[in-house]
Amino acid sequence: MKKLISLFIIISFPIYAQAINSVKLLPFVNIGDYSNKTNSTSFSVYSSLNLFSYDYLSLGFDKLKINNKEWNYDQSLYVIGYTKNIYPFYISANYGYLNGEYSYKPFSFKYNDDINIYNAKATYNYNLFFISGSFSYLNIRGFKNLKSYQSEAIITFQPNIKSYFGASLLNTNQTDNRNLIGAEVFGSYQFITSLRLSANLFVGERAYYFDPNTFTIFNQDDTQTGNYKLQIDYLVNNNFSITGIYQKSLFKPYSINYFSLGLAILIESK
Image (cartoon, one colour):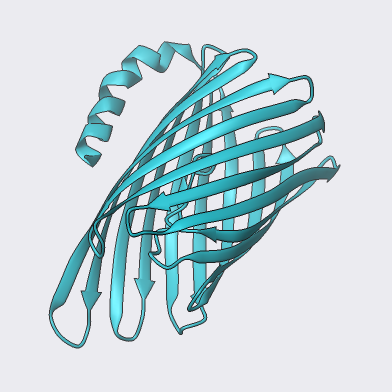
């Protein structure tokens, strides 16, 4: 499947090249510290191409390695998405493919994860409010063979260019007989010209959650019972910023502390 994504990019690039107004690149390094004496490292890079001044073509890649004294896990995630601006509506379609390999150290035992991710999202802008509905379908094969259906309703209030606040409600229904409900509140505020602070708090339950805004997935079979995230952006200038993120994810048998450092580089066409 990743070959099909690469082929699409190769074919599409000459078509869209002349329509590109700007390109935003976001490379990240991420470290995970697990409470069960496991650790992870990953490198990810995302890009967003502003097309025809209104639409966006987004690409993402993440390479993850997890190390435990008894096993290793190696994962690759590829994501592509397109957002169409039909003001006051914004329509997004996203596709992701995840492949992972689990290796048990004491003796020769391996299995592969194979996940196809399909997401559609629609947003309506009414005055200072953005009202969204998102649906994700995940076909999961590997440790378990199951399907995950994720329906999310989101409302965001943006009083000005410096801030926004919102909340969402998520239902996850899976073929392993899990029917999970969770809610999230989030916000962001630019205190001074060069500093923006953002925070998210999730409570409830979810599993295999795919975030279409950040192109990330919690690829754990365990049920997630909470998550909070704090992000600081240092805006060097209009075209360059530095991001630091701390995130704590709670699962029923363990928890994970994530630390991320990234850049945002905006390249505008002349």
